[in-house]
Amino acid sequence: MKDTWEDLAATVARQDEEFERVRRALEALGDTQLQVPQAFLEELEELTSPRAASPTPFVHGLRA
Amino acid sequence: MSIPPNSFNNSVAAAFHGRSDAVQTEFNLMSMPLTPDLLIAFCRQKLEGLDKQVTQAMIGQKTRGDTSKALANLQQALNLKSSGIDDKDAVASKAAKEDIVAAYDAAIAQVGGVNTALGQKLALELEKFNKAANGEGGEDRTGKVSEKEIASLSEGINTMQSALNRDGEMQMLELQSLVSQRQQALQLCTNLISTMNQSAMSVVQNVGK
Image (cartoon, rainbow over all chains, first blue to last red; front, side, top):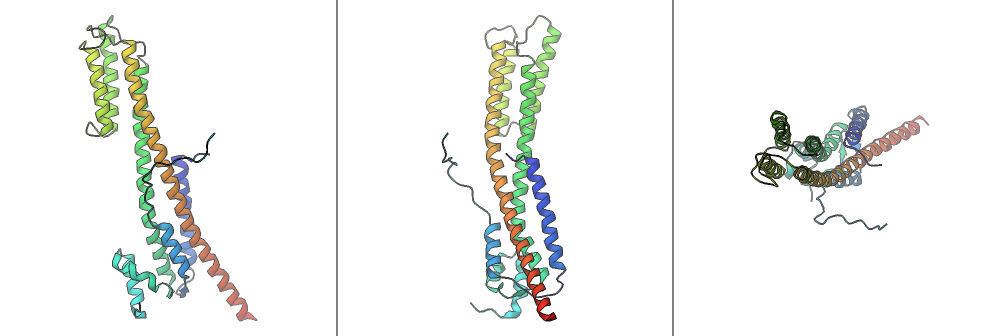
């Protein structure tokens, strides 16, 4: 089913709540020194880096 | 590259304040221990870039929705006069023409005025209507607006609406992709916390033995 604009706004709101839970869980660790894996940082960097729009229009590979 | 350990926190903190030169060196240092505060700030900074894109895409979608609504209102105003506007009753004819002009004006204002591409197209359509309504062109010179002329104007709005819908679908796909990207990033953070909690629990259990 296609998402509507409102569906996506609700998803973003849920994601914000999820981040808040993560933040609280991290805060609960106090001043503990965390050994964060390099792979996590690299993956997060990759996931959050802006993706350029494709210069060519999308062509669907399936035909009816 | 070797960087003194005491420069680590300063470098990360500088990166969180938007210094891109520090961001470059930050990653070489990240295998070192991090405090939860710094990790939160790091995650938040990384998500901010995505958030800006999501917000921009959402504003675009909302604007497109408002424009679509304005075009639909204009279409409705034209549809109400789909059989044309005659000149039998001068007062009724004048009122009908004014309603349509007002609908065009509202649509032009909604799309951002005549300086926008869509605003210019609408202004040209309005000009066509005014010519017909003032008897300056079309099939007759009496000021009647024929059924055919209304249908042609309505078709013009339909074309604009279709183009807008196509753009909207592309924007929506982009927005869906961004939200999904954001979900993956959050999932990654959640998984990390879960792993850390499990590690902490196993340490506690081992200490207890």
